[in-house]
Image 1 (cartoon, rainbow, N blue to C red):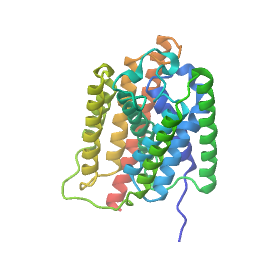
Image 2: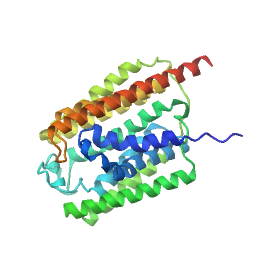
Image 3: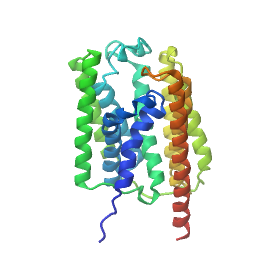
Length: 327
């Protein structure tokens, strides 16, 4: 019995792709803050890589990845940055929590759901889909062994602690014990459900799969819709976002079992999400103090890089799909 082939290049690519997608492609950080990857890669990249490794090694699929992505969102925004509870996060005076304010929990419905979307779908989901598209022949297996996973876990822990320390020093805010306990309990619940889901079984329905290009276009439009929802709609903004999420998840869950669904369809969904981030970045200024011109230049650079990755992924995945069909 041969041992499954590992892929350190794929793991390293995901390690750095996740923070680039999460912060730079989104437009929150400009080119001048690229050195921040020293901390961002272990947190964003470490989380995405560990989630992918645990899910693929256990034989589970995308529902588990997204559930663990949601758990990471709660960990990152509830414990590390505490943006879910901080009424003036980053001292931007943008009142994120006022939109759909829930006094009993001390959170804003819109902001909480928005963070779950950004991390589960984009930071984790889009990053994994893009990198698996670059390495299609190893997309369904683990990329690291126990030693590699242990190293990544240590880096993730150190990066998370560094970010939390920095946040506490600059924000001077701490969530209540009840908020921390509730966040921890929900994190554990999401993790448990992710690994209680059944393993992936190859099955195909009679309905033919839609065009991968159509799936990518749909992901782009839905992604832009989520990013452009005006938060001043308050509970309406949260309701619209939740409706888009449910529509997306149910549609993809149904279509992914159709006849002819391939890795190219999965890549197209990630590509659509990445392009939504890259396009949306031009409509918002960076959160750091960089100039607008530098921010726009960075947006162009990162969107161009995303396009290069997408094109390369489409070529590699298409070749892998054709090989499997004719072999």
